[in-house]
Length: 135
Image (cartoon, rainbow, N blue to C red; front, side, top):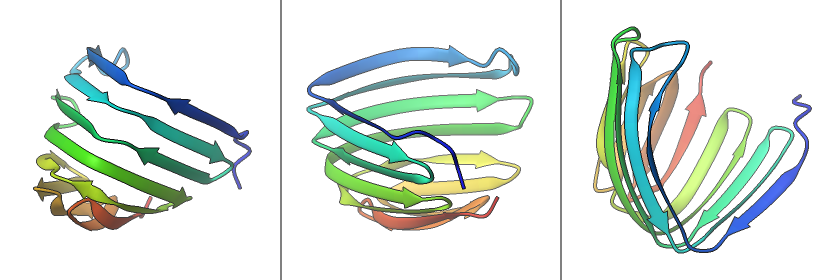
């Protein structure tokens, strides 16, 4: 059981963008941008919940050391998600499109429909889906 303390947050309109580089893995680099009309979330112990109003985001990243790469674009009318430990469920309507690949994971989505195979197993249909983290 996790000893993570409880916290909650809510944000109205937001926009953020930037680049990142991992100081431990200098080959890990990426960029992202996103904006939305609102989001709210809460977490306590192993539990998390989040709700989002209309939003859009995009990003890409890669690591030569871990031989991984990812790219995505997302436009979402709204969503709600909840997780308990390794199990996560999400319901919403979006047009996620992107892919990621690494030695332990492969994921692909087109217009919100796709699969994830590897460390995280999952399936989604227009942003509604389930995930289970194996390790």
